[in-house]
Length: 238
Image (tube, rainbow, N blue to C red; front, side):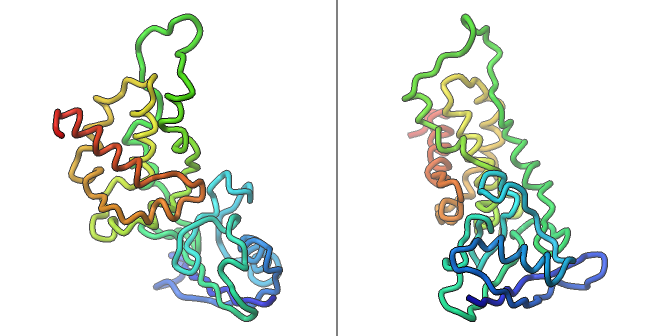
């Protein structure tokens, strides 16, 4: 089938503002949108900028907005976004992050917020024998959050940063929960002040956009609400 890719272009070194450029591509409906973008890059316009790496939904490099929805180009089939021959697919960079070039964004702010919740195991207690034992049931409490690939799709999908740019974001909160819910972790005192902040978990309004956008099927909104309960319980609130 033939589709038109309407891609947002922007080079801050040469352009005054973002603009859209259209490319016609012949592509199999079962091909990935990434394949269509690569066709443009290889055969039509080598100046087009976008990230990619594994092309199998593991690295998270090719996160972008596709017809207004956030996701990975490598996990999006053409037939899912182009229902008929001649359809136009709009491709834009992730929101809230500075555009470095075309579909490539600067993720520094995203990762700064992520690092603020100390996304690693905190436990200074001596280890009995060789390791800290954890039951399968304990692991299941946070298992889905370990699948995060830090693609920032949830961050872009969330409507809150539009009004509150300092919001820590769903990815950071979900990863904070991953460790707070870990039976081996002892980092509550370091993480909870960051989460229980004016820019922390309380800004979440349960729009579920983050959960819908997550390419790894993480129950992000649920994990945010569980984090809220942890904070309340820590304060002795009901």
